[in-house]
Image (cartoon, helix red, strand yellow):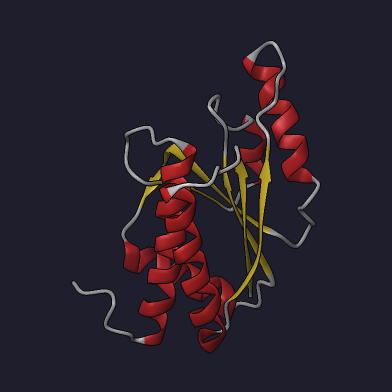
Length: 160
């Protein structure tokens, strides 16, 4: 199963980009052993529209460009469902085992995600009730994808 990331906002060179890249690289190397492939990282600039609704529509339109009818969309949103790492890994494993070919995890911009995307998404998850900058959300997602791979493979990286 191919796993891709979509993010509103671009990471500039620095420790955040280095850390996110480190976990994405670990995921890309460890994933094939458990049937997971890193697809791509799509970064878009934040919309410069004058109001939040238009910005969310502009950003959603960019996300829609990479989705097909077969793509499993997972949104990261502070109002989403909180789950643990083992449940996250189990979901990914279930999607893979049920023949899902593509999954896209989407991180919205400062205004959040267009409500219509919530209707299309298979899952809406959060990393807690706090609001995280997109740079940190990307690091958290990359690490959890790597952690899911280690859980699915029985590797001791994840300890309970």
